[in-house]
Amino acid sequence: RRSRCQKEVTTHYHVLSMEANAHSSEFNLDKILRKNIKKLKPYRCARDDYQDGLLLDANENLYGPPESLEEKSLPDLFTYPDPHQSALKKLYGEWRGVAPEQIFVGVGSDEAIDMVIRMVCVPGEDNILICPPTYGMYKVSAAVNDIGLVKVPLTDDSFQIQPKKMLEALNEKTKIIWICSPNNPTANDIEADKIKQVLESKFNGLVILDEAYVDFSPRGSLASWTKKYPNLVVLQTFSKSWGLAGVRCGVAISSPQVISFMDRMKAPYNMNVLTSSVVVKNLKKKEEMLKTVEEIKNEKKKVVAELEKIPHVVKVFPSSANFLLFRVKSHSKEIYRAIAASGVVIRYRGDNHGCEECLRATVAKPEDTKLFLQKLKQAITEVTK
Image (cartoon, rainbow, N blue to C red; front, side, top):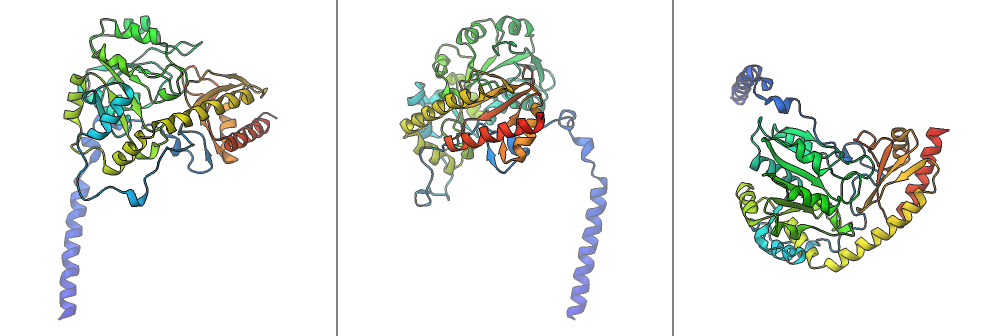
């Protein structure tokens, strides 16, 4: 009797399997994929290349956050988080000098990057303007949303935007201008007067100012400008100065009108309680964060001085961030691979516009800086002998 039941069950599953196989043979994903998704080249992040060793390739704050989340202080996990992130916005607004209704909180800056494109750009019709070399996610998010790209490169000499050329390149389908300051991968501030020229033009679109590294900049944030320019959206993150890259939290600061539409578009509970709890705790220890920022800036000066002593390094670019871009005489990609093989990972940037033979390295703690410089010299000797 048991044998008969087992046989019937086996037969039943065999029939289901045949039906599933028959159905799968009729399904053709290629026929339903959007054309722009078929052609999509994903953003290549630092961890796609290397996962182990001294990782100086992602511009993280290797000194860590003011405070981590201890198990005894975990928030309740059985209830949904505050969909408005009221406590976080209040603290952040007080720090940046803006009202809570001017703040959107999202999953890193990337959620806001994608959201503003979806908010104002019509797929297959509109375009955005970027200034290479710059952060790669602008291009990827545009491709995901089937949005065109208008490119006006930064100047070759000082990596500055060119407002006149940018405004001349606009057309009736351009909905967003992207500016990154301090810029990634070049680390420099974009001059405030040049940003103002763009904002005070007749461009009827959003101007996005990505300030991911702004707390390392001597100029500081331009977030207060959102009170004067209603089309300005300032992006910031907890991944850099705050040392909280792992919690994935970013903010957008803009006019209440712009933020209201971003809030309409977001998922109801886009931020989890663990992330918001960690961020709120750290916002209450701002002075500790700023102290760490000063330590990193002081260490950066030492790294610059040491890099400039290396004969094969021809230029160390000015930096208002927590990383350095430097140019070598030759063999930049080979040096990048050789130093990675020795256990120290930096970023190759020689394939970016205007960054020929360039490498990028995060400013680390003093003991890690010593190892980085040692391995860099060894790698240069190895590939240039």
